[in-house]
Length: 203
Image 1: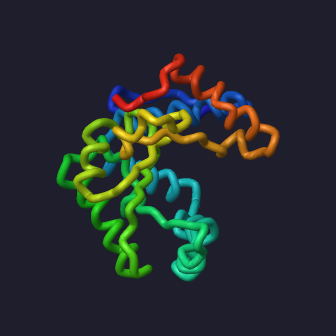
Image 2: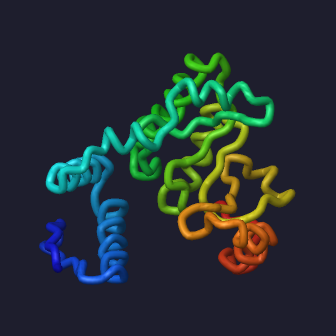
């Protein structure tokens, strides 16, 4: 089966005849939605896809996301800390500075009003290089976050004390949610290879 996706450059044919082809088509769609169109158009396209294929995004959200009572329970645990993560989960680098700062500050304010304590830690939505860069690292400091975490792969070193709003992460998601992956991931070797030997990846 093949599908046509309309883009600004014209129709793109998506091959959906096999699992491998579907993954490739998914990457094509993701690239288009995260690079070629702005955040508002991205959301419009996703709503359109959901309508066409009778997908209820609100029901999916309700089934997968924690409610406020669950968040309060976690926040009450002395071993846990709740951080901020924006309101609408945009790629902050694609917003103007005023809108990006509003997303960051208001998410902290909502958590403070609900949990009674203002979060001092932040995680960038998506968090890859094209979604959060030096401007966002500066904004996090201006929003009074002590630390902010990207999804750029890496371990934390002493040099990160000068870049506390650009911290790397060892991601245990997607294909890596199995115990056998933790030992090599936490060894530091895969992330050092991904960073071509560099300890810092903050530009």
